[in-house]
Amino acid sequence: MNQPSLRIALLDLYEGQANQGMRCLREIFYDWGKARNWQIVLTEYDVRQKKELPGLDHDVYVSSGGPGSPLDSEGSDWENAYFEWIGQLEQWNASPDRVAKHCFFICHSFQLACRYFEAGTVCKRNSTAFGVFPVHMLSKGLDEPIFKGLKDPFFSVDSRDYQVIAPQHEKIRARGGSILAIEKYRPHVAFERAVMAIRFTPYFMGTQFHPEADAVGMRMYLERADKKQTVIDNHGEAKWKSMTEQLMDPEKILWTYSHVMPNFLALATEEWAMASQESLNL
Image 1 (tube, helix red, strand yellow):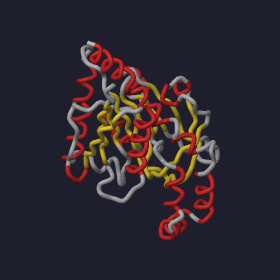
Image 2: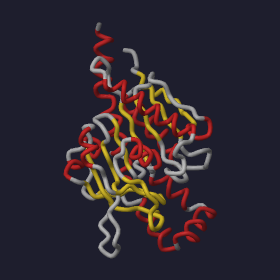
Image 3: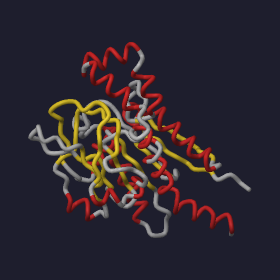
Image 4: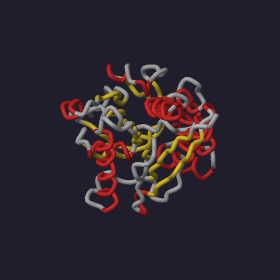
């Protein structure tokens, strides 16, 4: 029996900066394929430095996190091309004669997608969010297939200076989407709770947090002398200690890592797999 292959496009928005996100995503894709005896054909695109963008010949799309402001890129060549690519994918999915293609937007990509879809206000936070935080599901999140198996709240790795607030519910609903989750309740601060996950359309999904964060790899990364000192200098030793401890809690990051992206891949390939099997049977 022929081994099915899955073509994944991974859009790299890290602008050449060292990161753990791309490694984590690669491992998730290949582990997921190995568990199902699928061949993963992964192609990466350097969006911000080289203005590389995928065509419509992939089966699944994932757009990574990245550094810097999601506002300062407005009008840039790479962002214009990125938004044009989203529009092309939308047009593909609008055809009833085609198998729809799913896309997942992470952190920086999520903020850009919120601007593209006019889903809410993207703005700078009062202070940097860095660490392991609870994410609270809304009613739609409880029924979201990508959150299947998660508890409410669940925990995620958060690292950002920007946020999405003031969600535009009518515009989101008009596209068949919904707000899925928001950040932790902070009664001691007078700020609106930021949006943490949105289903933009039936096929486009995004999270403000990093569902790909690998607890073991992240802990090893944070325990490097240089990274440890950077975190302590910027956030304090208590934050460093708390984050390294929570990373190894099986009920927190390990649980989120093993559910969100694998659930996305399962959902994204469900219709595609059925169509592929039908073609094999012809």
